[in-house]
Length: 203
Image (cartoon, rainbow, N blue to C red; front, side):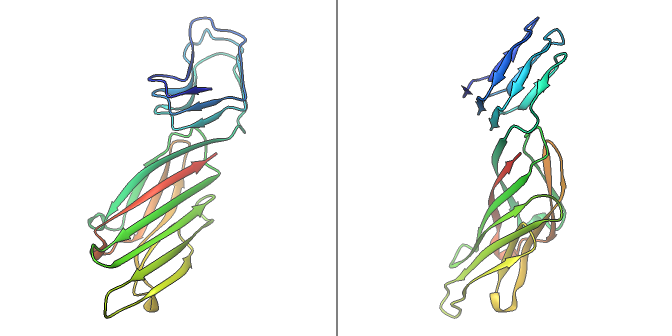
């Protein structure tokens, strides 16, 4: 296990040849999870390593003849926000997973600063397979809405559930080995101020 190092979790340099790194964890390191830093590192094998939260990314392979198990599980998490003034455009989230995520999960929260709030969880396996479940709660004296719903988007804020008004909707428009892009088709409602969300990617 290589965890919480200030630089790389594991680093191979010079002529580090014929090593086998098998079934370990490379988690929350300040550099790469594993860094094969020199072209003179020959014929190393990386199998079944779990990566999560490494600052520079999962694996840097500058070596020669490296065998990598590309199906090894890995994950990354982070936090982001979305202000209502940001409007309807793309928001790029950097995950540095080092591979295309098989699952993206977002847990989101927003409130108007008084008694109205909305929260939910959305998942996606790509740019065309995404859903979320949300909860809207208005505890003002004049309105006691407290309802749930589901939407074909990874994020969906709502106001006034009976009218099912979109008040901040985002879909996944692009996914790469280092980022995913949220396309905000509806801006976050002005009353909500800034929405916060926790994202997770699993590869």
